[in-house]
Length: 304
Image (cartoon, rainbow, N blue to C red):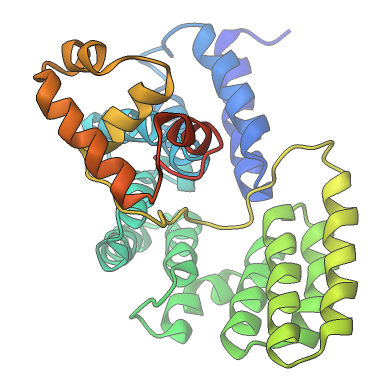
């Protein structure tokens, strides 16, 4: 029979699997269950770091930026070197927030610097994963061959498929992506498999092959039915379409819960006039006309 630390150890591995699959909803449910058991033992710091990192990644990628920011701060406070798994790498969580804030170059530097240090220490799996995450960034400055070198050297199902995906993406190879999608699916990389199909459909439309694009769209819809309505995240990073300041995001999140301007002001220790100014800028930036529109957008995860 597993004790509580055994359950947490199993949970740490399961959460990583959910993140690889892109199943953020299941990852979040498991995190909530784990955190409900209390704080992890001080003798299992790596488990604690895994949960904090995963919570930060899930928060940002699911659009709950307040949650993501809170756990990124907790991750940064952990006085422990990065470890063997990606969920032991603080840069993974920190880069998620940097990308959301429109700082992709900062995120790339974080990931590559951390990966180099981990590789030198012998944490090859974690290092290669961070380099692959850097390669997933739109407009990455580091050459793709350099970012993929370590993962291709290690090999294995996860890395081989991920590297093939990135090379097909660079070449906009529709045929290659369509061949790769079922392999990613069989390997449990559902988010990346869906991204392969979505990219293929987009490239087919760009090539004026509407028939092929429509066929791929049907495949995507059939694939999504398997998850019973759960959203499967097909990206390694979430990019905000509208860049709000951190304070504006805080005000928007509180406004979406139904709080009035004076109540938000009291919560954030601001003047009501300052909150009113923030609300005006938020609505203008997001091209919205009312707080009700903001509520729908924030709750739907489209802005934070």
